[in-house]
Length: 470
Image (tube, rainbow, N blue to C red):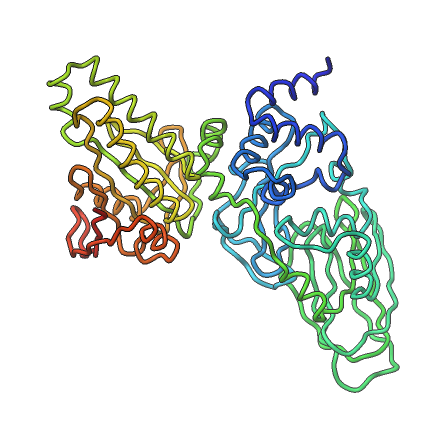
């Protein structure tokens, strides 16, 4: 048995068998492009399998060395990959510049960081493992634009690119070249996808027969995107590559076809979704962020739970029985959290902190938690487990605390304080959670009418509108 076959054997035992078999078949039979920057949402839909199970299988495959995870910084404007990272630890906090959009963007884990999977070169060698040997259109399709764009299939993609391309060339390291073209009226972009350099040519006015000339040097220092006013007519481009690898400069006509392609987006797996996925935290939770890293999340939902009167429980039933009960409650809550696309961040005594990618999933989870605790009590014939629950959503920072991925900020503080308002069997939710349309549908489907109240939260100066979910 080969090393890869042995790993696939382990994958079939650790992940959903159907998803594991689909991944194995994909590695053996799919073309190279399909194994580069795999969009898990896409393949789950294509295979007709639950997304959660497919994601679990890819995470186990990455842990086994069958695939490599990539954390790609996406431009929210054009969908290009501004930077690709092997780990989240190498994603920095300062702005990433997009040459095509002539703008800088501070990365946020729920909007700009895509997580994809590429087959390991130890398992199968594909073209993307040697990107500097890829043909121009393959490089643009597979390396510059991410799986967040709905690109047309080949050969339609190449035909479209050729339609909007005036000319392009390939320059080896240290090489110079001259490109002689006829500039049309309109907006033209000289873009180089390897070094991410761009020059805008605003071509307008009376056509000229006189040759215009521009010199461009490509290097590893990304200069701000420049702009030149030109006239329709002949242009001589002098290009010099001062990088240590080849570059692929091209002149693109910035027309409706280009804008439509860059605006044709699809769903992709975000870093936030992955951080709130329980299997990811179980497999990679200690490898996420460096100790001084702080990455923004624009919106995350947090749930805090705690057992009421746990001290009295220990006195009443004894340490051993109480411990077993508390562990059973942890197990039930953990299952509910995972089933609603969430993750347990940590447990503190008898309390649980969990995160969810959206407030509707968080609300669905807390309703199921309350019902699960009722069932546990019914099975025991007494109400020993009285769960207090609070839920809030908002911006936060992803950080490392006590060698584990954690979250920091006022949103976390408010969620914890809201839980402190709850009595037995009660759920308290903040106004942003309840007013979310998807969350409102969850509550309506459950026949629940939240009851509002104004209150002051301990340690927080401003008043909050909080809703009791009875």
